[in-house]
Amino acid sequence: MPPCVVVGPRLARYGFGEGHPFGPDRMDAFWAEARRRGLDVKVERLEPVEANAAEIERFHTPEYVARVQARSRTGEGFLDYGDTPAFPGVFEAAATVVGSMLAAMRRLLQGTCRYAFVPIAGLHHARRDGAAGFCVFNDCGVVIESLRMEHGIRRIAYVDIDAHHGDGVFYAFEADPDLCIVDFHEDGRYLYPGTGSAAETGRGPAAGTKLNVPLPPEADDALFHRLWPAAEDFLDRFRPEFFLFQCGADSIAGDPITHLNLSPALHGFVAGRLRVLAERHAQGRLLAAGGGGYNRRNLAIAWCKVLEALL
Image (tube, rainbow, N blue to C red; front, side, top):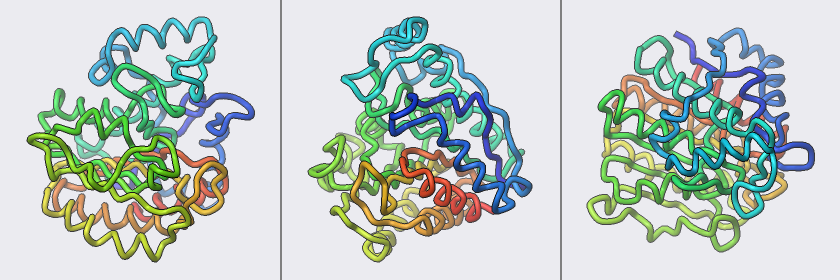
């Protein structure tokens, strides 16, 4: 079976307009490159799906979901302190990110596709009760809760190589011993959100189940490759039943708002290694989310490298 990829105009709507780093053109940049490489005919294309409020509330508070719905009607103001503006239809756009991830998750669990990728997803900063850092709803958080509630799957690995620490996922599950987190990111002393030190390894019963790997500015592939084997061993020992991979492309050299010097090839490398682990432990259940990335050429190539690794 080929990998499944969710693409379509409804998914591309998640973006904040001209001049904002997270614009609605990001999905089209990726898919144009995928077509150029002939990847579009090698994957199964899935249509975007909109989640309902009850599904979103598996992770988010009802009060916050209602607030997004209200701002979606007016299109006014910000959903956080200034990074994430409201716009008319923002609820529907964000709900489509969540619904598309849930649809891909269900296809993986049904065994009707082998690996899946959702390019406009991986909104890892959103908190249970609020937006943050361009992220309205935390689709990865909803998937984690849905795996438990719908399918009884508890041992889940969340791997994040976005330049920004995945704080919305990390702190929501910091005390959860059944969620293994491996998060490579630019050191929080130099980049938003300022969290994710190596000393943060989980709390209470989850102590030792989280691995934060802060990278110095200008970190390159050579440094990443030196650090990766320990992370892979960490995942191997955990034996997850399902893998979530946030493959943000803002860790690549030339991104306008970050300071790392990784390459698109590294994204393909990590996807390939996670594929091996998913086959070993999780019946091949690997769901990748595009995450950040604000240089369009970078994200297009990096996400295609992920697809090529899954093929």
